[in-house]
Length: 87
Image 1 (cartoon, rainbow, N blue to C red):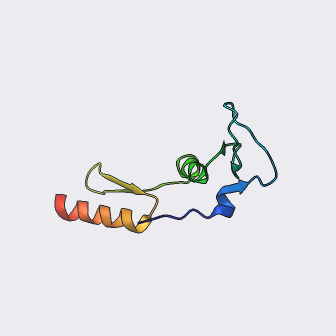
Image 2 (cartoon, rainbow, N blue to C red; image 1 turned 45 degrees about the vertical axis):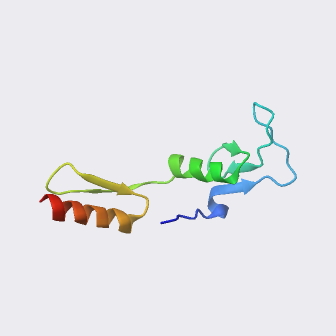
């Protein structure tokens, strides 16, 4: 499953602004939540998912198994399959 991050919520393209990294790389993409900058859009999307998106956890009521995923339907299927196969 491909997850498309909504650009307007995640990043700002710094059009007309020259932002340089410590290595003198042009970094025109900026995270809208924090001060993270990147030269490639995908890097801001990855940063956002790792740093700012909340993962949903689904715990098994019969053991310590935990299904976690940013796609809740997929995590629920994973938990259902675990219960069916393990309990």
